Structures are given as structure tokens and as C-alpha cells.
Length: 252
Ligand code: NI
Image (cartoon, rainbow, N blue to C red; front, side, top):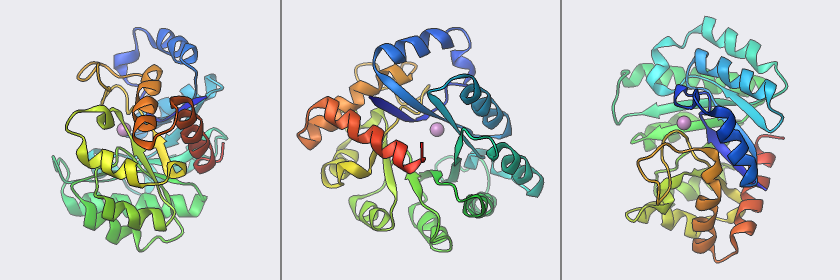
């Protein structure tokens, strides 16, 4: 019933108990998951996971922290990986001005190159955008054919309206359950339920009452319960609709 639209189950923090996590996920009715790449290595691991698990799909791409490795040769590798039938998106790609490990111009260049790849392959994108709202929107203007999801959405309701109008989905992590999550709650409150996605971004962003601990896909129902509370529906309804959204966006 539930769908985790953004997970990093290939992370080495799951090496000791990945099968246990997968079993717990099934027990909690999380019946689908998108495993997202951050680099060539993790994109390869995502495809390998998807290949061996019927309920897992993969996204390939380079995170802004890894943008300095993006060149034509790397795009060629992503193009080849995307030929796999379980690869359903390019991501996560975008801009992160919070740490700025990689200079902004290099991040922007990598973002543009990977958006062009998504356009060429007719795949949706998974965007990571932190403290770079206006630059991200500006770049996206050059790729009107490309949509997808703004994962771990951190923008304003105003920006959300702009993205929704252009066909984007908004992804929410455990952050929505935090006491100080006023902004995220406001966006969830106002956005239509059929354009929201639930994601763990595991191993990060665990929801309350597990904040700060390792997150995993079995905790999706906790986020669905919070979103249901905000939207005034029952948790199963929030779970079902957000899962349908993920399957629609990723064409699963
Ligand atoms: Ni992520």
C-alpha cells in the first residue's frame, strides 16, 4: 500500500541487516520503493538492488556534492544504466548551497547536463535543492519538458504553487513530523494530496519518535499518519494516494 519514493537502501549503514529491513518494510505494507543514486557507484548499487527485488526501482544520477565528477563520459554511463527496465528516473540531481562542497557554477553545469539527459531519455527527475531556490527555478525554465519531484521539499508555499503549476510533485520526509516543521506543514496543508510523495531519504531524516536514529522504509506509515492528520484523511488513504502518485510519476 505505501511507497517510499526516495531511499538509499544501498548505503553501507544497511550492510549488516538489509534483508531484515526489507522484511520489516513488507510487514508494514510498504510495497514499493525508489532507490536513488548519488554517484556512479551508488547508481550502480541502486540498479543492482532493483534487479534483485521486484518491489524496488532505481534512479541514477549525481548529487550536487558529487557534481565535479559529471562529464560526458559519466553521462554515457548513466545513459547505459538507464537502459535497464527498472531505472525509472534520473536523480538525485540539483543544487545544494548549504555546504557548497562543490562551487556553484560546477553544480549548475552538472544539473543542466543531467536535466538534458532526462529530457533525452524522457525520464522524470528527482531534484535535491537546498538553499538554491531561485537558481534552481531559473535553470528549470530552460527545460520545460522535464518534470519530476522536488525531494525533501524545503521551499515556501509560494514556490510550491509555481512548481505544482508546472506539473511537479513535492516529496516530504520525516521532517514533516518534527515540532518545528511549520513551513513543510504549511505546504502539505495547501498542496493537493494527489501531488505529494512520501519518502524516507533513509538512512537520514527519521521521523519522530525516531529523530536522529537510522531511518528505513518500514517507517513510511509514520509519515503517512502525519500527512493524513494534516489533510484530514485516514492514514491508509494518505498512504494509498501518495503511493499512486509515485507510481504515476515514475510510470511503474
Ligand atoms: Ni537522498
